[in-house]
Length: 223
Ligand code: CA
Image (cartoon, rainbow, N blue to C red):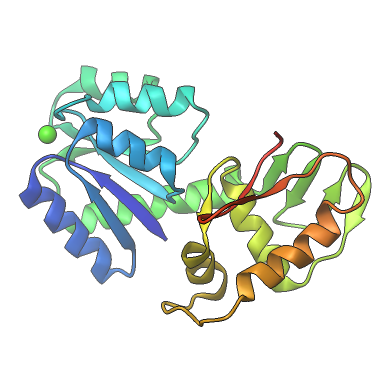
């Protein structure tokens, strides 16, 4: 699980990073609003912890821009204790939960876990990109009416691509998420699997969905 923490107070940010890492999360930090937004748009995260008062671009504007760009990553905002208007504004802008500062690390972890469970458990059981659909519960994959049979590994790879259409996943990210290797196996494993997916998903279709981003990685998208 990969979490982006956008918080300008370095002490708090480092504390959150340390606490989440201990729980097995992988954490990226951003100390500035604009840079945080760029990061959130550039690579897929499982959740974002977002401070409101940030230099560059404040948290609420950042959140609004994120949702405008159709990025649905679950967001927990970090608000000042007792500030109800901030909390309400955050939820209105598309936040999924809030946590009042100061907070105990245990509480943050518990709330984050609940948020991730809620999101993966209920909302996201179905992905769709163009006429390609994937049901995570029945594990059925369809291109239009055509049923696609995938191996477990191919399914997982396609799932990671479909989680964030339009985002480029690097080979390293794919290796980490689909194979859970934290080293470069030094093979063209990813390319081989992408080729297999393409054969099943795209070969017989006019519109290609799986795209190679030269020198970077792969993305799934409709145009
Ligand atoms: Ca702040």
